[in-house]
Image (cartoon, rainbow, N blue to C red; front, side):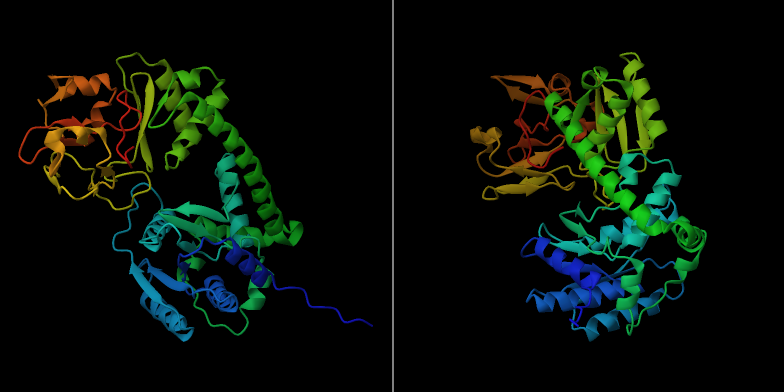
Length: 444
């Protein structure tokens, strides 16, 4: 009787596929909490990398300081990483900002901000999320009344900061992880037993009961997968519609008025996500859009939420990160560069690129450098009021130029000005989407 080959291990299959999909040349950074799932991931990924003659992964641990055992948990992670001969990095969350979100969401955002530090464009942050986590995410989204974007659950790949976030075990079930955990040592985070957290409540109280009757974990994970496919198709269609309008740094309301209400809301949410920010709740966004479409020309409706700020100006919508953040997705907490906090930024003559304090990058390829007075060393300054700049052989008020270019008032003190050292402004670096059509690389 022929012998039967044992079925391939789902963890090994998933990680072999993951390694073939990884960008070349970047580090693999495992988010290592020390729990069962991340312990299985770290051991299995290390073995897979060595079998494929690929560089070892790194183990990164983030300490939120939310429980008394946090220090011991970090030391356990360090010991495991060193026993495998891996590089270990420890990061501590100093101040957890809970103003706009609950503890769970605040801790998650702080963790990812630290884990992606210096990742680089080819770097990959790897997490141990599995099919059970996907089922919980789908169920949480459904209970909160989320739309298609929420119900799609977690993506196996996502651009994260300057690099990538990957979840190679997203289709691996609980049984396979439990089998691979045999013989390994891990620590249980005491916060995982706290039923005040929604995810813990679902994991410990609700899903076990659903699984006794419906095999709910697998079904919910598959539902998230199919929802992701449908949402991706819709996103492509919405992107084409927006591309045809020329929407970029601002969204003309005329581009929304030609559609029915449901499509207007979908286009607006897509545009917000395309700018790198998480959209607000459906009801708040619907009310803001109603006001933006109906309010008089002298009104400037505004919507603030944890991830951003929407405003109307001159029959167009503008999106900004929340106050205290530089650009969408930036977690540094630094304020944007303005005349108040960056009066003069020197730009040496032989330096081709200049990075501003808020992350924007200027280059000497800008047409302004054809001016002989800007051919050498220059200085970048910002508007204080009353400036005049040369235009077509005459000097014009900067305020008037900004009005003509359609620059919203709240953004005008972020527009870089170029001047000879100690001189007066000679040129303006207009942002993308302004009437001048002259862009600063990396500008919004």
